[in-house]
Length: 159
Image (cartoon, rainbow, N blue to C red):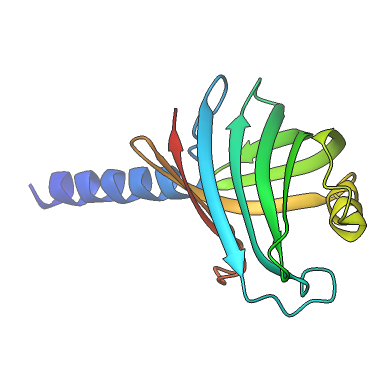
């Protein structure tokens, strides 16, 4: 009896460790909506903005690729508002609870022409390698940095 209980506990522990370390969520064909609003900037590029708000739709077109549709608004310190829209494409690898992505292309639909540094910042994503952790809870997706710091902490919902 003790051997049977010990074996069942070992199987349960192994299953939990497997799910935690190796199980991968199948994102293929899923679409997620994320919304962010940021303010109080200290960097030179963003200091002249009062607020930057954006809505991002993340579409996992296949196991190996992902497309980001971003629309947003830059609010300058003087109150001027500039809308923008862009599409980012990236190679995607999902491993355990990690999303590893390499951004391949940035296509602007609507450029914020009064914000060349913002345009340069977004364009510089080409070649950038992102390494995020994720959790899926039903129709919610949580993205955060590997270190768990607050610099990247995004909540999304499935659409």
